[in-house]
Image (cartoon, rainbow, N blue to C red; front, top):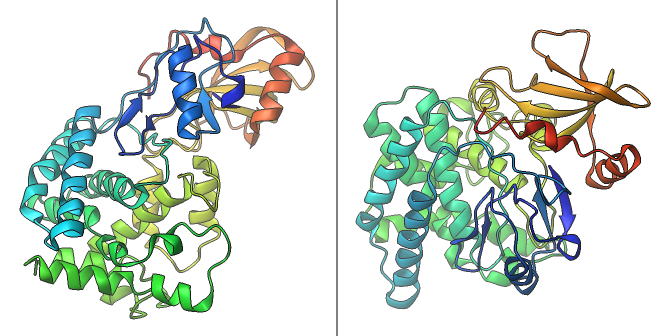
Length: 379
């Protein structure tokens, strides 16, 4: 898997990311073969780069399954778009119209409970808050199902996550999408959005304590340093703790006007090792036990040589199954398949950035993604 500038895309290459248009609906699904038309459309949308399975236009390996289907996600985006439009045009927000999408997300998550999280989509900026809210609801539903929540609690969690940023509709878009550092006054406005969310939920007739707590508390931190109320660990709703993790992970791995999209292993490092006191550590560990920290097709450097990730397993996401295709200096005549969870002699040193990966492929005249062509739907 390599991220290429849109200008270097060629017909026949396979996308490794879902790509959404300005309305938040699918333009291209992961695993789509690019055509001249699609490449032109990406350029018109302003998409500057995308992840492809291979530089080889003849590569045919399949993408892993996803926890929520394209149709479920598209329907959820459409429902939330309609609800936000009604709020903007008529000043009313009808929560009841979202229940069908919440149920569909929960059903998909439960049905696909053996599918690792591999979300690394590309979205344009126009509807970031809306699409982000859907993705957070999906991630929250996945985390909630891992904790064996009752159906009622899972419903509250998924709906609350979908509505957690409702208050951002009261914040000027120029502040939300500002590319330069926020002023103190602007940051103060941003920090009020949880309270704005609560007000809008009350206006919509929602007084469900779990949903209200999610809206108000998803920026609170375990050590009490969060906002808007600086609540300590024991006063933060468990569901809000889940949404806090889903919210930050999706934000870190999303492209925004002011930041690049971080790869999953970087998001893992930031959240696990550089955010002390922010998250409930037990929920966080459970989450990352079920996230493909090194997604299928990631080109990595191990202490024994270069390798490509074939698949990952639940609870062992730091130790994927890989093909080693070079030693420290040269391409191997026969790649070595190894499970890092069973091979303590071999370990990951780093992930090749995209330019390094391209240079490696050119130097050895071999694209390792060809090793994955028989790995369809392995997770």
